[in-house]
Image (tube, rainbow, N blue to C red):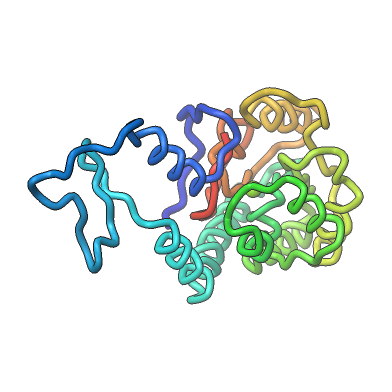
Length: 250
Ligand SMILES: [Mg+2]
């Protein structure tokens, strides 16, 4: 996974889970009545495990995609990629630090500071708001090791740490508890979406929070997140995108 700066690429549409989006595409493509049996096969692979749409797009079955995500996690590859990106971010922080009076970094929470894989897996990699909230209030979320090390490195250098998350305010106490349990014991501010936030994208909220940090006299040297919407809009010297094969959020 390469390190990359946030770009201004747009992300449209409602809050989405990748697998749900995949199914949605499939469902939208399905005709109202069964098509005639084609003269040539439209499936490939063992026992027709793939489905090819009329535009040539080949779909994996949902179970196959879930198995690939599980393997990405269980093999340690997810952690290895996060570790490598976090190491690059730490090196960049060290390079940017000299001469900065009030340095800061911004970290996203879910699938950046914390791993949500356990609840994602339990919910079948779908978006179930009640299940998510119950998990946040009651469960421990392990840290992404590389990000926790980056956090500790930043604190050791006197860098101010801000969390900016798409979680909503009603989960503030739960989120603070999960962060502390994972080893993130101090921060300057945890910014959360208002419960009545109704923008389709998190970008305006996250950009405004970074701008507010700058307005307080800090210089944001790093911004780290697993979603492009964590990073779009600037207000950081460098941005680092972590992997997340489970979902994307605009
Ligand atoms: Mg996230």
